[in-house]
Image (cartoon, rainbow, N blue to C red; front, side, top):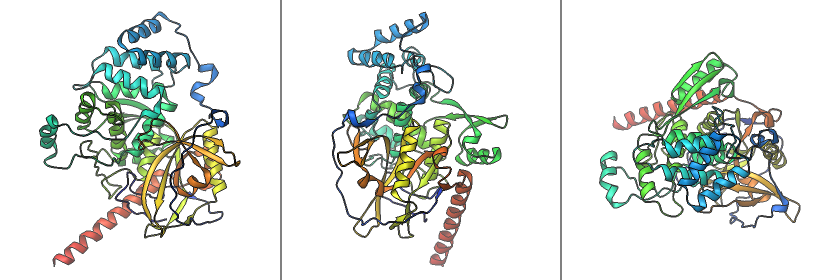
Length: 462
């Protein structure tokens, strides 16, 4: 598998992170197919099991005076629509869910957002309503940047020294997908992140297990150091990480607080996506330009597969394996697949049956099968079509629609370049290469390329 850059897409570089066992190879014809449009059929839709909402953990009634007081205080601050959403969160067990890193409930964190100071430029009620709305319906999460209003252009220009801040095509599809997944599957943790990132500290701490990054503690520490994320190691099995947006995120978040148009990101989207871009880009992201630097990617937009896998792993504190399905040559041409479509389908559906969403990277090709674009979306479920074939229910943060989209298996499977899956799903089907091994390999390759480019420039100058 070769590494290459795609300069025109939100997801810019597809690097092999995990090697898939080769069973059979079939080639895509490279034909362009328009996106199908379907209407959801709830009867035929499979709703994946979510362990966070097991019956033993499900609470739908306020049981203590503290909970009742917090709930009543929130209702006093909310409008009719937000009150309705809050009540729905209570009745469905989401509001009192405590599956967060510090065991705080969704209610606890919403209350903190409402009654404690927010970072300068942010508004308590706006962040509160955005958090409730995103948890009630994560499909509203978008990666669409807003424009810079005239009254802020001078301030932004002074910060960026003339750099272009008019972002037309966002490179945050990976981080937006991770944000969606956090809201959809881990609502209490999503609310905790929302509270911390919008607070005056503009950060949130999270304890993670080092063996979710690598089998060996020293290798896990290498990864943390390589990604330059602030951390404090605890014993030899845990570390406390500090997540924070880049310094310019507050400017974008403030603008979206006072001047947000339809289909644009909320202030909360800005903070979440900036934070996850910071994690993946080795703390090098700039929210104003939507550009990044960092040691693992030669492109200045988006995240590569290795960076995405690391970000997912630390945000969820899970051992995520990025399985690469497409075979691509050195000219960015799709030449085949690393496994058959039935295996691909089984791995994805097995993950869904475990209660996981599956974030995938898919590609678009021209008539010569050369990859011209790529994007990140999330598979959230499946249903069976009238022809007996599987239909994947997906969320796309870049389609200007606050609802699911559906793709038949014959359309989507050939386009999937990679998928992030739990290790237990693919342990018997792939030859696993640990993240730190692939990361070090990628780093050395990029350093070698940079040195060679330097030599070439010197030769030209001479």
